[in-house]
Image (cartoon, rainbow, N blue to C red; front, side, top):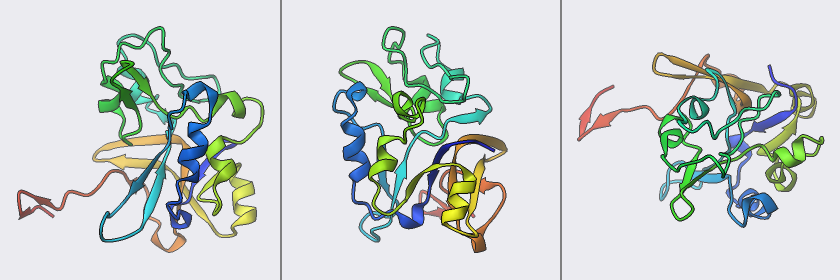
Length: 199
């Protein structure tokens, strides 16, 4: 498994948007947030989930694999970088290839933007901005051992199934111990198409 990384604990997220605001403060982002806060059932529940880049390892970052301009680089320690502004052509291949829906296209700049694990900080041992401000620990930066020492009995997943395709990631998701199902199913289950139950 991974070394120091982000662990996402959805059960702790309160939707406060502190992570979004902190990410927006990074100089390299020019006032744009690279983290998305998703509301899982809008209008029915306050449940929310921070969405950061999962830094796919196997297969090697689908976003980087489909980039025709080789604008998305992966560092030696597995961090999938945001698109190089001098190479990105804004084609959105990366947006369509990402199984987690992370990259976004800035239409004005014609540039892909996404979380790069605050590489300007994490390369020097500092935690990403989002994890430093999260009041509940829904975004935890550290090792698996540190996480388990703080939260005994916690289970994490870094492999996700999208149909027949398995994706292993450098960022992990905390999974309730009594709900562990391996591999963790990725995406949302399709249960109805045009009003017809397809389960």
